[in-house]
Length: 600
Image (cartoon, rainbow, N blue to C red; front, side, top):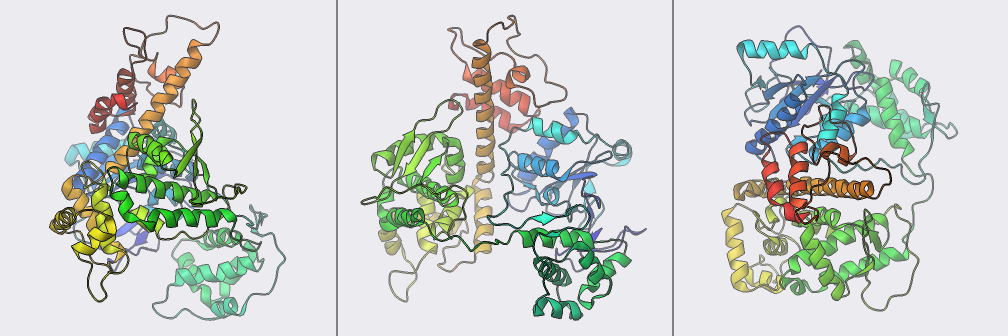
């Protein structure tokens, strides 16, 4: 178990479960020593989006579990009214990669979900029912009395690990990015019995030897010291056997011996963690700047050269789309990108229809050029245009390490907050005005940035700027030039909740997931219609939801694609089918999905 005796939310590993629960916050691991999950705990946090969003998310997820017949227990986590959903898995449990994929999928549907405990099998832990909260109160089940006893008895029966696949099938999702090893990463050899880096063994550095020989000072972060020692040993070509020998006697590794005495052997896990980190250090010299990096710098400079240019109608969305394209281009080290409107819309926090319209405007102004139109499941190819005379240069290889971006990454992170959504948020114009207030230096030396300066910087009228600043002040949004990033984010979250914009980004992602599912269904329908020797008489739609929602073809899951009386594809009816079968009963997104049928 993990404990937080100081109530500082800095949990530390301690002895095995005692006979009596502690009076301070404590949490239990979700995975065993083999890193396979035997417990799943869905932590729906009220911190960012508020308790109402957490409750709605918990209601929807609990409905899915109930429809699947999965025994689970629901609890309020503490005084902030966060929600926990617990279920037990039968042996051998679920593999960490599968649970990590599930966390990625559910995060796209439930904005309040904290995926951390489900993505770290080594230390992922959640406070169980009965555990105190650091701000007072404790985690308590929703049920009481006989109903609670019945639920606990059902939990004792455990659930097949296949529930992970069932939940994945019920929640259409984009694939999680595959972890990539850095270029030049060192290979790990003998991974099963005695893992080490594939490099010659050499003496430890003076720093590592000093850490090994010194007992950590009182108050020192002993976990960090263990990691530093093992990292130095790994980079010197030492093995797990060397790490175990050092852990037995070295003064600097006293924390590992204390953990062993308390019933938790942590040496192997800490070694593998340090070994993975050491393997990521590139063996080759760092990549030098390529011509494409200079081109992207010129494009960024051109976008920010005249901020007033983006004060025109639609300009706030245009600027945001360009910065999103620039961020993607820096990551890929190329000006040519295969990207669909929905993915770009999520990166820029605007609607896909807005991206489709504004890309045409940006192409007309020579900011971008459509290299190849999209076709079927293939996205369109767009190229960012370099201002001024351009020398034809080869495109850089995608996936190379990109140079550190300029202020555009901070601007994009600011502009994509839920508070600045067009509806029901404050909109892109307000985002640009707020950014002009909090970024950079005042135009008048020694004075704070006033409305006149902001109007000059943004291109908006003085009346618009004054009205906007008044709205921000009323919502408690900071307008200081040197505002703390964490404090700013927290206050933007509160303001988004006040205006009803909290969670719109997550809803946009979910809407796009349904759009992709709808498109997959239509493509399979076309393939079926063109297939020779097919059987006719297939039901127009399926009458029942598949009991175990396996990853079946869309046409098998949803039936024949609906058509109108004239024989044309009926996207509104099709969206209603997809939304109904992919959403639990009572899901508020189901109604919104049907209302947005024409968006398909």
